[in-house]
Image (cartoon, rainbow, N blue to C red; front, side, top):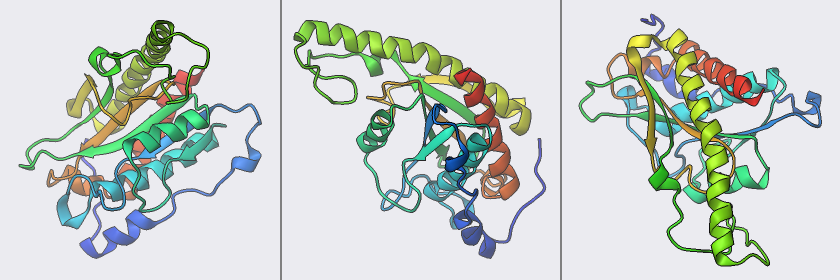
Length: 246
């Protein structure tokens, strides 16, 4: 699928800073599901460089704000890990999700190949290696202590906790890719991948990292900086999340 809408370079900065939604949290049901949306990078960590001077931290924030808007319109309560150009550690991002007892954790990112030759989207879940607990600890996955629990039992509980979340994370990742195929084209699909992404470590709920495309691709990079593409991506991810929450 080819998108024809491109903006002049001068308009990109303004576009990426434009608020994407009006908060409707006060209209959501008290028992509404909670999704934490994590805009990758931020502050001094600009992330992947793209064409026309755009960086990953700008694109991820723009898409994340639009994603929140689409989720709230579907009755989902959302928390953004950052709402501006703020620096957060990877651990702080999952801590926010755990503190809010989120039902899902969605971390939005963008790729760069270094050559500008690659393009496409993909969803990542933690690998077995990434979730394995190598040393017994009296702590839950969110870092809080398991008081009164022996270390070997704590390790088993952590493994079970990860296992339950990982099954649903895999379903969510597959659903995200399926939905993105409809708006970004099946030929750009790079599928679902497993890796030990640190931003997902410690999340006690289904957690998925989504790479929305390659910023340094001469065509895709410019597409990812447009309102229409950002909104289509956000809408597709929202559909996948709501389907997983049912």
